[in-house]
Length: 361
Image 1 (cartoon, rainbow, N blue to C red):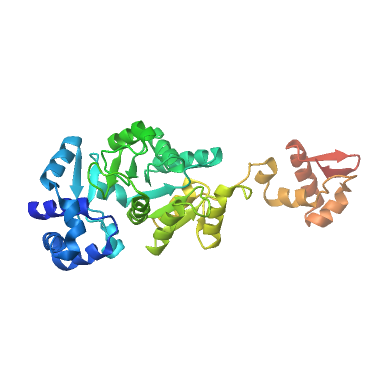
Image 2: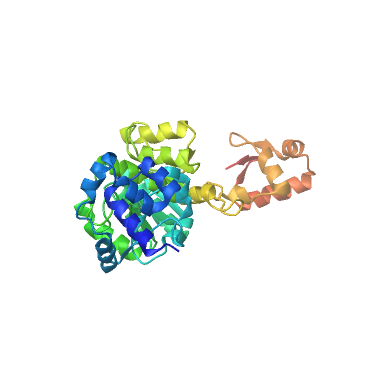
């Protein structure tokens, strides 16, 4: 178990270190959190870190988090998702988690659904429907809480009475964007909000990009619904690919700029998916979570088998038809059998008699 001193050190580091700092990650691997903190704050190289550390109070941060219903989950603790260790020296110092569910258990069966902020109506519908279907299949939907596809994915999971995780580029007490305050509040109640950044921290461009690596590492796979060629959602997909996670894309209209990034992803080896069953088949248990084979509508002739099918295939599909003698030769069956099957097929409305000839209807 983590000692109180170690937790305080990691709380301090989360306040003074930017997410994804691999130099700090190396120190943590070699020396642990307390020694790392001491080394960072000493000597000429630590001037910038000391400036950030002034006025910080890790004990107060932990107390404020507890009052908010949040906590700091650190590597090595039972709730820590060990798949985040795949990030190596870029592994988070810790994760601030808001909500009552176990982060580790939810992350075991999770999938990321991400995409463009300025999404189309098509993308919004697909993301919400996909997330709802995943929730119905007891999968946890993970996204970044942003406008567009992220919001549609969260709302779809919540509407299906499912659980969703929002990975933020700010503190878990900050509702960003502000227009999503109600949505993020529901996520905290029905799922989890998580962030590497301490309470009160605000988002920056680099923090959004570093946030994407957590989404990619936390989940079994990433689905990109809509994305232009320079979309930030593609950085999540690239991170997932680098971590040997499944990367999937939903195709869109070839005339849409917001589909060009997804189509490029698919051309580069991503898996094409169109519904939750196909997603689950890729990321679920081998041999059990299989998607049903797509099929068209059942037609009356689909139920015709055996001798009746041989006779039906022998009957011309229109024109003047053919006499029974010709059908006998084509079907390779006795004339009385052919005649019986013709009348059976006639009762099903599949063939009709035209004088002495028979033809398909």
